Amino acid sequence: MTKGEPTTATRPPSVSLFSASSKRHVLTVSELTGLVRTTLETGFPDVWLEGEISNLRAPASGHLYLTLKDASSQIRAVLFKSTAFRVRFALEDGLHVVARGRVTVYEPRGEYQLILEQVEPKGIGALQLAFEQVKARLEAEGLFDPDRKRPLPPWPRAVGVVTSLTGAVVRDMLTVLHRRCPTLRIVLVPVPVQGDGAAEQIAAAVRMLSESGLVDVMIVGRGGGSLEDLWSFNEEVVVRAIAASRIPVVSAVGHETDVTLADFAADLRAPTPSAAAEAVAPLLAQAVSRLAELHERLQQAACRHVEQEQQRLRWLMQHLSGVRYRVQTEAQRVDTALFGLTTVMREAVQRALERVRRAERALMAGSPERTVRTGLVLLPQLETRLRRSMQGSVWQRMERVQACAGRLHPLSPLATLSRGYSILQRVPTGEVLRSVEAVAPGDEVEARMSDGRVWCTVTAVTPDSPV
Image (tube, rainbow, N blue to C red):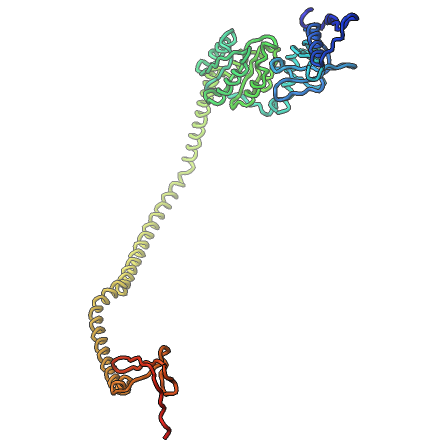
């Protein structure tokens, strides 16, 4: 059997489970399923199958489950994660493929299935199909939009180069860059351009140059090769890194007939790496010649302009002789007016100063500070007079109070008490007793005298006989 070509597997050997002379042999379901799986795996260890993909499922485990079918039959198939990782294109329902694998039985359900080891699209190469799928997806995102393309800087200070150190490509680009502009600074970032991990390193180098600020433009490229050799520049990680670059990117991958997805994302596609170097590097000799030409033209233009201005000045000097006299006369008039204005202003200032002095004297005369100082001098005298006046008034009122007290004393109840009288009050209310009828034997009364109080108990009450 030749690898890569569909073949018909040999017929599996028959398995005899019963014979006429043998006793009945009863198998369990698991035993029968195991025998069938062994028979299928032994009889169909490597088969090629053509069919259409349907019922494609991709769970989180990374394995792919699908059904291969034709017009009248179908078979379940599984593509384990390790194998699915090697498939360059995306599987999808309706895709016609040619697959290689081995036939086995999924014992928990008793279903036979195909464990796939290799999958290729029918009628088109796997890489070409993957190229078209990635291109369509990124183009739908707008990564290849012409409006995103930026012009290359006409006079870059530094150029970044992302390529491999091996081969003639890097030497050709450095030679062209140095020849066109010896003063141009070159930042070379060596990366592998094919093989496992090459795409990630190319993308990392593009991002580093984009964010470093060291260069104004960069070239990403390599020499020619097959589609598989150039595949690193079709990887999505590289295309996205080029599209996201902050500085213009020139793609120089392979020869003029080679096309990669990096070419669509770059700001400029060069047919060859040498052409890319010529596109980014200005021709210094041509620039110097151009500058010399411009310098000469500038000198000639300046000389013509100076001659024209000299002629214009001479004409003005001839036609403005009368103007000089008028200017001098007007200047004299201005001086006279200025002198008069100065005198008037000086007198006005003097009058204003005199008004200010008068106002200052008036303000000083009515100054609150002066009034306060005068008041502070009079304050001790006024205080002494006030104190004396208050003392005299107090003494007069004290004498009047004493005289009134002397006249009121004979009328005071206390004076009556001092002559031997007393005031009886009920205990404990303090009610003044004015009649014997207000008390009864056994009541307690308080007798208030001039020098104290006496508490008494009523033993008997005798009212006076009426007259």
